[in-house]
Structure formats: C-alpha cells, structure tokens
Image 1 (cartoon, one colour):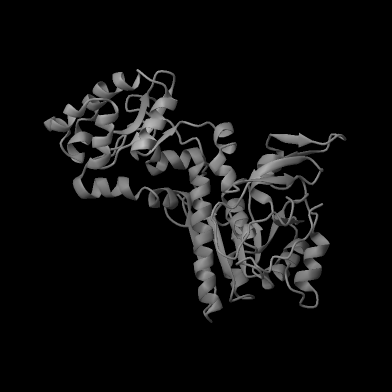
Image 2 (cartoon, rainbow, N blue to C red; image 1 turned 30 degrees about the vertical axis):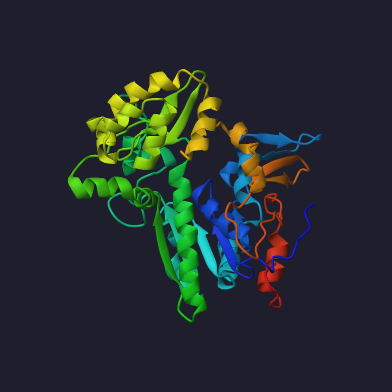
Length: 398
C-alpha cells in the first residue's frame, strides 16, 4: 500500500475535483490534475465502474485477482467512490459532495447529467464558485451534439485522417488516441484557467470541451495552409508540406528520420551523402523549392542512404547537427537512456499487489517532484473516507 504522502508541495494541493469520467478523455483530464496534487475523486457506477477497468492487459496476483493496467495508467493518484446516478438517494449524496468541491469533470453524452439533476445549471445554484467541465465528441449544442463519438470517428470528422498515412494509401488513424487525449489536455488547461479567475474572486463557470474542437485546434498549421492559399492539405506519409529533406529514409538495414529544416542543415546533408553539387541544383536552391521537388530529392538521396546502416547515419547526422532519429517502438523508447534521465518511467504498485510500471507526469517544474502518492483505486474504495473528509467537520482534502 502506498503511503499517503503529503501533497503540500504540489501546485494543485487543496483543489477538490469530482470526476464523472469514463474510458479516456475525462479520466485523462482528471489524471493531469491528480498528478499535480488535486484531490480527484472518481465517481463510478457500483456494477463494474468505469468500463476501462475491464480493458487488458489485466495483471493478476497469485490469487488470480486481476487489475487493468490501462485503467491504472489514467487513474493513479485518484480516489474512487460508487454511486448509482439513477438513484435519488445517491444523487442527493452527490449533490452534497458537489457543494463541497471546486471542479466537476464529466464526459457523459450531452444532457445525461442534466436529466439526472446534476447538470451545471442545477449544481451552480448550490455552488456558484464551481468550475464545471463537460467533455464530449462534438460539444453540448449544435447539429452534431447528440451524435455518438469515439476517438476514431472524431479523427475522421476533424480532417486529421485526411493528412495521416501515405498519399496513395487507405485511410489511417493516428495510433495514439489523440481525440481523447487532446480533449483531456484542453479540458484540464481550461479548468485551471477558470479556477484562477475563481481564486481571484470571480464566479465559477461552465466549460464545453469537444473532441472535435480540440483536434481542429491542434491542426493550426493545416488549417492556416488552407486559409492562406486555398490548398487542401494532403496525406504525405512522413514528409512535410513545407520542409525537405524532412522525412523517413530507408538505410541499409532499416528506416530513419532526418529533419533538415533550413539551408544550413541542407548543406550538411549534401556533404554527408557526398553530393555537394546538389547545393547548385536550382530545384533545391531554397526550402520552398526543396519542398516542392521533394520526390526528386528522395530519388537522389535514398540510394546514398541505402549504402550504410541506420546507426552510421544517426552518428553522421548527429555529428553534423542535423536533427535525426531511429524510428523507435515503445520497448525502444521506454528503455532509452534519455527517457531514463527524464525519469519518465516510474514504478507502480497495483491494488492487488502486482508491481508494474507507468509513465510519469512529463513536464518538469521547479519545486515540484512528481510522485504516485495514491495507487490506482479499487472500485468504491473511498466511499466512507471521501464523505468523512468532504462533508465532515471541514477537514482539508488530502
């Protein structure tokens, strides 16, 4: 059992968050705040809890008691309570907790919590300082508000899939669920911005965070390309619409990536491949021309890259200051010496005693040391504890 270490040095110490989160977007927003010291209490249904609790990999102890590592990755540093949100008695109990907290995060379908009596309009009347954030696929209003959403469908809707994959390939989603996680990031960021207003004497408020809006938001370069010239951004594999050579190349044994994003770096690449005459080739005289003619550039460079191994080219490009990388898989990067230096991989004990690992809060900050001060919670493990602290004699959230 993890010691309940003091969170007094954490930036969000004392902030109380009630999370009605399921699967990814809401729980990720909650996990960001929990990692920074907020007391995040996860509200789950009694019959199984968050659906991610059943997602593999399920790590079992000697007694066969299994716990989802997917769930653990998004729910460490939180507490869990159970509530049947269709029960009038449980809703009454939740309203008391909401009255005592600073933030509510939820990612139910639009309108669900309103119908149950714990939507923003109902709860802001009893807690006007409350910051209430709803995360959904397409937002709370508009033509698509009631439309079902999962990460892949929002990737398709947002335009992201149109620029992902090879130009002549089938539609490809990003391998990381960026719709869920970008929405979680935007939600947590905006919650804290509004919370600053509250702490400065302002009122609470409502935040409507959509996965669609989040993915359109992070596509600023693609949307500005369209706004600026009417050009429809296209899938280009690993290549870049405005930079070259800036892509994956095939070496003797595998692929690697270089990003020669300016004239100086381009000159280094020509020297590395022993083709200095390319500097005098009018097709490649500027960054814009190299980008325009990057297929011809690929045909000239790749035969040279195929003469040596990835390791050779990484050493050569590093020596010349050209940004480069092998194409790592997750075992590669999670055991990487620099990831180790950044302490991005941390030990984690599951509630069933199984020892595993997780990734840390990835941003370094003076005066803050990331820690797992609460193991991911068993379902409903903190029902009595949270009620005693939040509704008792004014004891501070731990």
